[in-house]
Length: 190
Image (tube, rainbow, N blue to C red; front, side, top):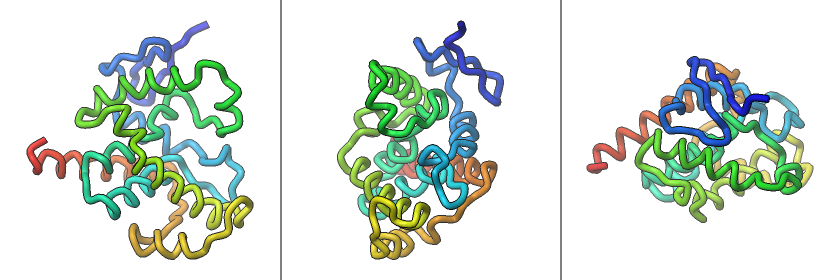
């Protein structure tokens, strides 16, 4: 049995020993654009890529730090290679956090500018929790949370949410945000 993921750009990523040379942001964007958030238990399609763009937008609005926003954009990038397991399943899988970290290390080295610690920064986690609450309210009818105020706030910060982008468009937006944050980091001197 192979531990290799074959990507859309023809890369082969060894999940047990991922190499930064195997990682392409285009593959991440494409895979996350095709991956449904919440295990697909939504009122309409909403991708992990659109979620990541939302989290990055919240971080950018709150911090105006392109490095932290880039880390927020990629905080779930490992799911491009490992899949988006819902939290209850992740908690049951022994070694899952180690596997995520291994893939995140390769992703961060390939992307540059960010580290796994940046991806796990408390400000990124707080933005992820805000996105979670807004997504539940807007995309699941408030099954866990019901906070229309947070949806209004997020709309004022990042524009229309949720957009329910089709997978290809979600990947394009993810790539555009990646390029935008990298340019901002480089404009600030790296």
